[in-house]
Image 1 (cartoon, one colour):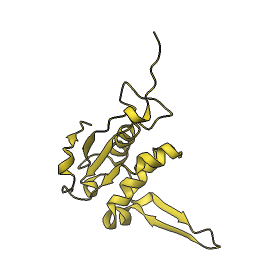
Image 2 (cartoon, helix red, strand yellow):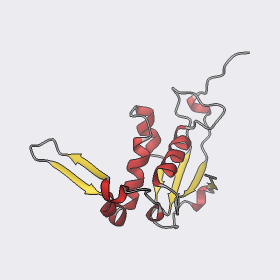
Image 3 (cartoon, helix red, strand yellow):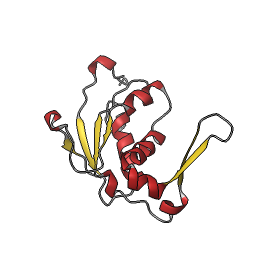
Image 4 (cartoon, helix red, strand yellow):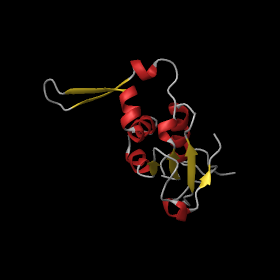
Length: 142
């Protein structure tokens, strides 16, 4: 019995919806990363981008467990002296919950060309409304 390798031209992509309301931010992001890579498929091949599209709704209702709202920071640096910018997650979740969710998903995707391409198929919305009804997305069970 031989192992079959997926071909890029034969990959079929589906659309899935993840509802983050009341669920931990990291758990939702981990499920999104698995779908984006296609690791749940029996035809998964590491060197082929065989993942699906993910729509994450209700990102503003995702929860951070423990003291993460007060103790966790999102940090970035401009590269210049004194260029460190940091935002507390309490502020980030209040002002831009889509960015907080996308950063969590980005951290769980490999930093390769396949990972960067997979991240373009992730759409995050703060509320329950999204504009992808025409794609007929299926609900993903967490």
